[in-house]
Length: 250
Image 1: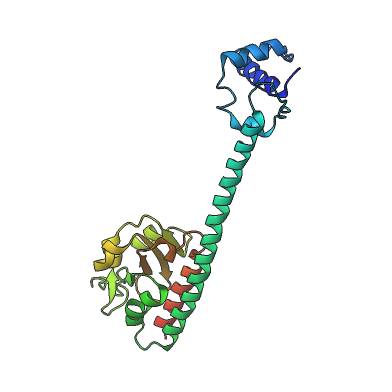
Image 2: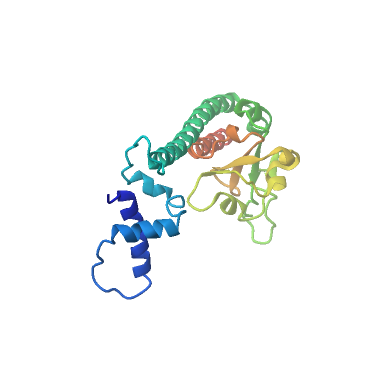
């Protein structure tokens, strides 16, 4: 009986052998005996190519005969594929729930900014607890001086609580064309998170588009990765950066 399993295996072997030399026209189907001989010489052929089991017709189980149970292999391959799909869907759902939780916490943070009389203090002291993270800081690059011979200000916001950044840092850290970024491997932790840097395993950065002064960013640092989900948080974090800018402009 000409098995679809053996035909598929021999076809793959013949195609592989023919690719090594010049094209000689259409290739005829191999004889069943040649397929069987190849599989006997290469018993690992199907085990190394489990994807073939998804297109092969399984043999019918016949009591009293001993043969390889390809049905079991096909079921195992399909189960592995389904497990991979379920794991990916689970990760997406977890990120979705985390993103929804972050959106709710950002709304509370915005309410705190609306009633704040000291925005920098609210950002650094109140927002970490509201957002469920370890640290929240503002950092700004030097403000350009209006006078040619006068050195620029230390940073773009002339008061305590705003960390200084070197020129070009905001564009380098957030990237061109983006308003926010979530980083699973934060860099420049000491510069952005100061004494809380050892606690930060994931952070999020957002532009704070203040008028005048140097470029400014909002840096959120978290110990728990779930507090700042990577897939569905950037738009929410960017909105928070714009809310901080609006509060500073009051």
